[in-house]
Length: 416
Ligand code: EPU
Image 1 (cartoon, rainbow, N blue to C red):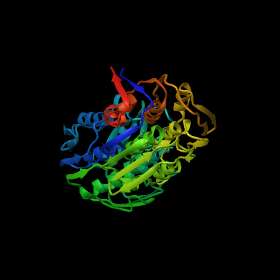
Image 2: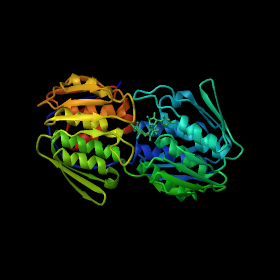
Image 3: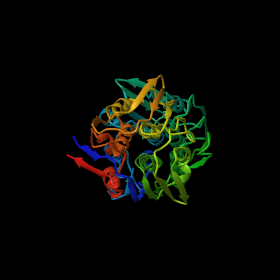
Image 4: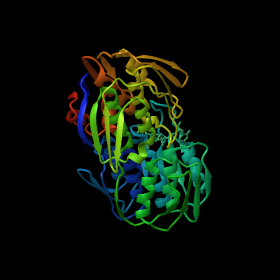
């Protein structure tokens, strides 16, 4: 299993280009199931999760052709509308095939995702929405067996804000008969990017990016070309790394508007941030100040940035309260950060982080994707050597992280 060996203590300097967004690419890849014509995607990040999704789609009969950061998906015939446990258990986003398969084939068999390191993560809202659109969904032997002659438009009020739930319903509704209204929809920029791609395929979607999305179903969708939006969490992760380690870095190819909450908190921590159209420059030459964050659906502070800000807080001046409201078990990194000398106590869904002068390198274990990113940030500021184990989590969501940090001057290497 690969590890990362990081020797901390060096400021980060230079320029990086942000990759395409994992959490936009994955649902957009599933949108290919809605049309028999090619969906041509660019700015697709080279990540394990993208490969897993490509494998899942290929198993169903989708023709996948990939080169560098482009991907063409052609779902001419869907041979088998099944998502097996083997793939779904490794990547929960696989559940995003449910809506499109049901809309296109009238049936789908998708494994229930099972347990997850960060929380329960049920899919009841996906199921509830599809049922409102006329689907029957039975759970047998760990699989959701869904069927519908043709989905009908419906008004769906989500009990809570769910990103992939909103995306699944939006894709299903694109081919349903009549109009669907999703209320309490997720407003995440990735939902909007999916809506843009579906729009290019001929779907009629209004209000994406707000909490009420209206979809007028059409009888078929065409192929399209779409450029995946920049990854706001990757962007935020590198910004938090500079805020913690110090230095001056320009991130090109970013989408600053998708990062307002993160940028505000980084400024509060003392970093100087300048934003141009599609680039963000951060400069930090002092010890960060403690900043408290509370995760919330977009446009609130992203849960996917929580671990990175906890890492930042470990070396900040003062005490930060980090409150997680989206997932009930997303503090696994706290214990690992403590191994590096961080002073953290957990009270319910709040971590109280008292900043220390310095962290010390040690071996730590990554437990999920963003937790791993938090550990990498802590390792960059820790004295001496830190070894981050189980970095397959990082490879799921950060393209060439050791190369990108290496370009900025970090002492980091992958040990195979
Ligand atoms: N929830 C339910 N029922 C549902 C769906 C969700 O109770 O049917 C709950 C979840 O358990 C959670 C909350 O609703 O407590 C929000 O979960 P959401 O459904 O929004 O999460 P998701 O769609 O499964 C996506 C991202 C996650 C990100 C969350 C929150 C993708 C592929 N994944 O997950 O990304 O943390 O939204 O923003 O878009 C990551 O990239 O590391 C990652 C975990």
